[in-house]
Length: 164
Ligand code: ADP
Image (cartoon, rainbow, N blue to C red; front, side, top):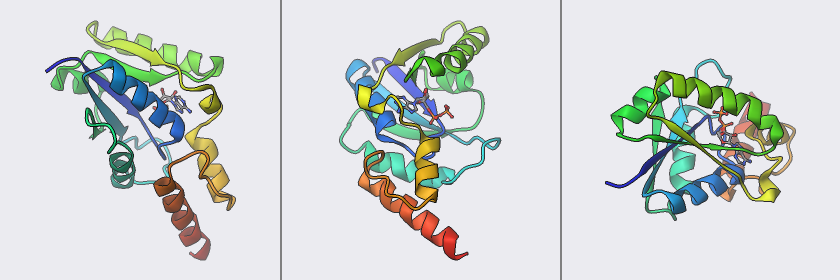
C-alpha cells in the first residue's frame, strides 16, 4: 500500500500554491489524499461539493493523488485511512504560529501522526485563498493565482451574486 499522506485544508478555493504543495507531496509519498474540510465555522464561498469538483479537476495529472471530504477529527480520519503523515504548507513565518499549534495539538491527540511541512515555490509565498476571494469579489481576474477552471468558477460565482 505504501506511504499515505493526507493534505487537509479548506481549499476555498484551491490555489496554485495548494497545487504546488500537492505536486511536491505526490513526488514524496506513494499516495496523497487531499482532504477538503467541511468546516462549518468558516464562512465559505464554495460549497464542499464545489470544492471537491475543483480539486478533482486539478489533480487529474497526478495519478497517485485523490480527494475526499473530512468533517470529524483529523487524527480519526488518518487512523481510518491507515495513514500517519499529515501534509501542511508553510508560506512565510506568519504561518508558523498557527501551524505549529495545529501540529502540536494533533500530536497530542495521536502520537502516531507526523506533520510534514512543505514549502511552496517563492512565487506562492504570499498567495492565500482569502486574498483570491477578495480579488474575485472586487471583480478582478484571478488567473495568475488559480487554475483557469477555478478562475471561471469565481467569475460565475461573483457575477451571480452581483445580480442577486
Ligand atoms: P486551512 O483553513 O486548513 O488553513 P487552507 O486551504 O487555507 O486551509 O490551507 C491548507 C494548507 O495549505 C495550510 O497548511 C496552508 O498553510 C497551506 N497553504 C495555503 N496557501 C498556500 C500557498 N500559497 N502555498 C503553500 N501552502 C499554502
